[in-house]
Amino acid sequence: MNPSLLELVKQRTVLLDGAMGTELMARGLPQGTFPEEWNTERPEVIKEVHLNYFGAGSDVVSTNSFGGSRINLANHNLNGRTVELNLAAARLAREAAPPGKYVAGSIGPTGKFLKPLGEFTEAEFEEVFTEQARALADGGADVLLVETQYDLREALCALRGARRASGLPVFVTMTFNLTRRGYFTTMGDSVARSMKELEKEGAQAVGANCSLNSEQMTGLVKVMRPETGLPLIAQANAGKPVLSSGGQVTASQGLEDYVRFVPDLVKYGVNIIGGCCGTDPIYIKAIAQSVFGRKP
Amino acid sequence: MKKETLFLDMHKAIVDGDRARAGELAAEAVRAGLDLVEVVAKGYVPGIQKVGELWEQGEYFLPELISSAEAMKAAMAVLEPELQRSHLRARTSGKVVIGTIEGDIHDIGKNLVASMLQAGGFEVFDLGTDVKLDKFIEKAEAVGADFICLSALLTTTMVNQKRFVALLKERKLRAKYKVLVGGAPASQKWADEIGADGYAENAVAAVKLAKSLAPGRS
Image (cartoon, rainbow over all chains, first blue to last red; front, side, top):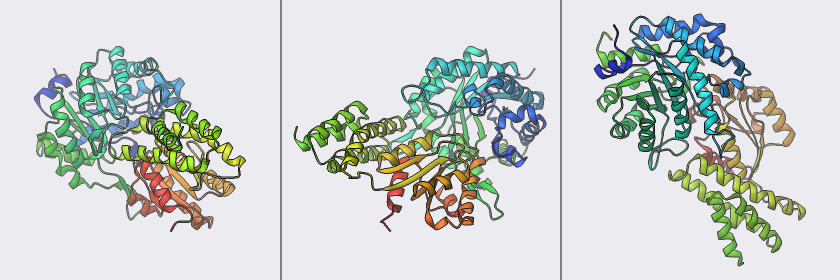
């Protein structure tokens, strides 16, 4: 029998996947079409992206449901299909997963603010995340990945909602920026406070994604590691998008430069590693080679 | 109350993000018959500048920026009608048309930039999210804008910033407007590549950038 993902994390570094949106663009996602719609309209494409990541060496792929909360979907008049789209997202990743590989149900931020800045209460957010998490769990996710959180309060709502929805382990990544006083979220949450609160609320792994490239991420990892005893996640961006001479959008941090910092990330204590914006299966394959040697 | 004390209180109300107090003090200045242009320049504007500094120092974050911009709005809502009555203007920085570009509905960053520009003395026309390229041009032409600010959060939608600059050129309007781009995936390099006039990493930097490019300056 395969070890659970949490057991695997104890044994060795675990490899996540990279970006989804740009992979869908490369396969013709039209402007104005919300990526989650393709879970039902072009399921074969979503599955293909997952298969490519598994093929590149990912132990875990994350479902195409980052913007799948009812609040996000409402922006595209898809809120009536919240359960259907999240269920489909998890099923597609499950179907693509070879035996012994894992599916993380992706839960991104709502894009709205809690009171007093915004209109929503914490109870409302928690309810919305519970609904999404339940559908992802029902569709076959092994773990729920609350990601790219810039507001600790919202992250805690998602964590509570996800835990309420199922017995699955919940992982949480925050997104931090470097200020003159150190690393903080957009809302001003410090690394120490974020790690502590998430651990207290029952997260099974914590960490950071997005915003920073792999070099900058090493600096953040050094700060995060002493703040938690939980397995640590890092998913760095490949810099920022730039125009290639052919007019294509590519990542500013090239493959070689990106991968150069992978050994440091692992050395400084990352247990679960993957990519974020600008990364693709080629980056993941290179991370796999860096972490595991030739054969992932 | 002495004028200088009042100015200090106004400064504090903005730095504290205290809307009610900022509005009350503005009303007090009106009742006292003070020079309202001076009130804006010496009371409120230094407050919002201080907020920008605190943000740059990593002391303030998004919630504080929003509260302070709201306090500034509350004060200006009291002062502006009075200024207009005396045919005076406190806002001279320039006119800005801003929006999140078509295909993209993310508005947290765009709203913050709009608020800070307004607090910084610009007249701001916010077109909202998923704004068609044509609509930016229509509005800019209609109001006589100086700046067109395009926000995009996604790699998938930032390409529309590039399309917009091309469209302006095609309409022979490129020289008429300063085009500024922003959003998580954008960068100075991106702005240079697509031929935009500027890029700002955040709302505070956006105000500085717009001021440096404002009409009457070169």
